[in-house]
Image 1 (cartoon, rainbow, N blue to C red):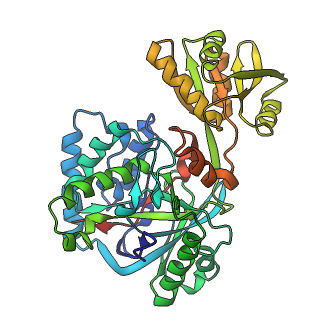
Image 2 (tube, helix red, strand yellow; image 1 turned 135 degrees about the horizontal axis):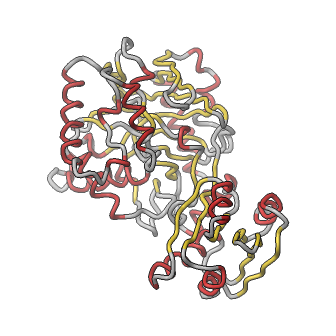
Image 3 (spheres, rainbow, N blue to C red; image 1 turned 30 degrees about the vertical axis):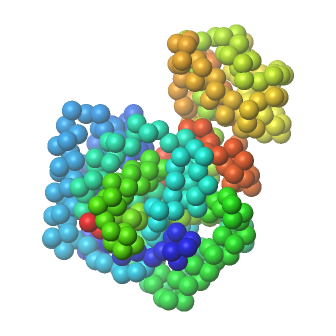
Length: 426
């Protein structure tokens, strides 16, 4: 199991008497502009044991009371450990079924070996970032993890398993496994069910299936695990491990708790896993200014009018290197040639970098075409990027390395991972 970088863990779950609906809370990096969401989550959790007390929602990350919040998180973890809140499932996985508006998807919770993870842009490690890692986002997250007794993952990691050999066999026999929890999730999160995977035969089957996928990869560039959500959290765990291991002997490094991070792996070909492109809205720069910068990064730009957003969407998804440009003059599709990389998101990122460097405008990253249309109606310049193909997702990373930041999202905000499982890290 060491060779594949993913293994069972000693997983902590709340005792059965605790309300899972009040315990489970959505990933801390969601609803960052909507404090009212987190205020309502706080109201729902109330005085009951809750993961909300062990995380720091990112909408509060820049608050003056951050240090105080982190100290409270550390104390809560210690209190929960000391007060019998948790039950432990040793050397196990948890099969997770999640029912959302996008459908039903399955994942498997276990631990990743941080020695097999490298988030640098030119990484060829088993575990890699799929989007650019912003190094400035790591220190505040390290601050939360550094003295924490527990980790609670919102990290989702993708595998490319067209044969559906790793997770799906477990899903097919889920009802024969021990059910650990089953509960609705607060604030529109759908429903979640967890099953214990602890038999030696099941664990061996997981390892063997992942091993077969690994054997099919280029040994010089073996991408087995690609980050879906939570890359900066995993990068922070990696950075903390690098600090810790400096003080350890080679023998101590082999099995130290900080060497690993608890995650949920999911098959990119799971039909319940919905990918959405993240679009862009430009401000204080007109269409001519945008196209002038774009011409620095594309040898040829073909522009074709579109009758509406539906037609534009079909056009950009049927042509290579295309995106829709929305302004007060209407909608047109831009098709590029002679760019550094094939994905239009990369070329748009080059435009963003140059625009910001020269102070010619600002940008925001937008979920949903409707929102881009509204902003464009109010004077912004909208860029609609094409769909993300599951079939070419891994090959795109192999070819171009990590995508530019905020290229895609897995499902809607309420469909992100909820904190449920925990693991001791010290």
